[in-house]
Length: 242
Image 1 (cartoon, rainbow, N blue to C red):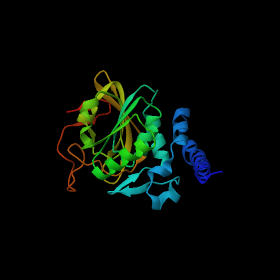
Image 2 (cartoon, rainbow, N blue to C red):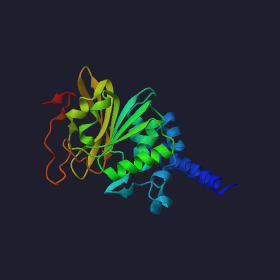
Image 3 (tube, rainbow, N blue to C red):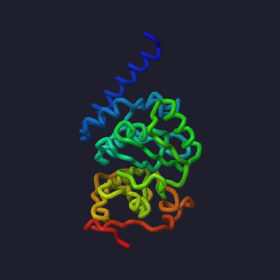
Image 4 (tube, helix red, strand yellow):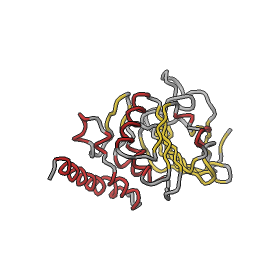
């Protein structure tokens, strides 16, 4: 057996273990999501010096102060989008490209936006080399979404925001789902919002902690309060507050 085949078998076994011990036992049950998590070689999206921890139950640094989320978080956020296979999905925060790769196996098209140029370029090259042809990486302010391909069936934000940006809500089609961490700089709640009759209706899924969504409609890069820009505040009745 060639060395590459040995490595492939070893990583496949690690992914199976990851799914059983980290993901399934925490309640993620979608067969399609579990199959996608089993198929994507996470070690290819992790810096070489952290490869031994690629399938560990924790986030890992990828440069520019960003991280690749722990496997469970990737699976849970993906399941929360309720994907059926025909969707066009917008991801905010490409990072290493791992989440986009998982999404690509579950939907028709993934548009992903990364604000750090070095990460965007590296992710684009990595995804291309690994054959994820339905993923399109863009470099820009993700807090503003990506109007050029809107509306989207689902939007996934992989960074913590002070509130749901109105500009992202406006890029959802009717019935679309938006999954986003919302809270302060230190702790957030993962929220799933759905566009129903032109209004966002949301529910909190669980507590979480993410790197910050920086940009015009997220947190200020200067470290103060969140940036100026209209936001879609969600009241108890699910309706936006002005």
